[in-house]
Image (cartoon, rainbow, N blue to C red):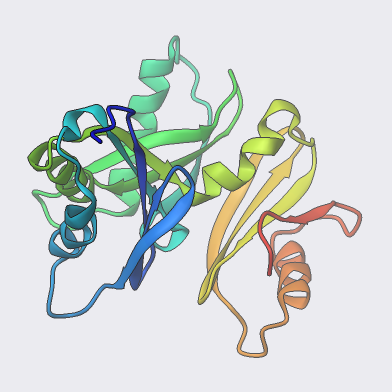
Length: 223
């Protein structure tokens, strides 16, 4: 029997492998090998699950932090609207990660408040175009890209602490984002210590960032 109920696919993109979910259930996974491009790997994972009326289904993407650049954006005098601030964030991203001359970046905020330093993220626009093209070619409605740090931070966004150090622990590296005096202060990516002691490394990062000993420290994911 043909079901017309729309399905929601989510493709999770890690550094070396992919996971495909439908309605929250894992339905496929594969390694990203040197023999295939990311586009070929993602398309090959999705293709067997395309239905007879694919345009009813949606496809979203989730990016592990290893595929994203994170940075802080200081508020600037003269900013009058969100578009101006977003444009300023985009210009900072290009300066920090210039890449090739023809390369462009897709930048947006993770956490932003008026007249405060914001937390932002940027990805290579070519990656976004690849993912969008896969959805279009498979006639799926693309819902967009979710970023791991933003997803994990979401429960905190309604009431962010004035002072805090957040850590998103990855397999090989981790993201550390500090808040001071009610705004984002700095964000670092560091390789994990070889001994795997996440608590010790978090305490060390707090000292290197100049944070007080009593500043709360939070892991956003299991470590």
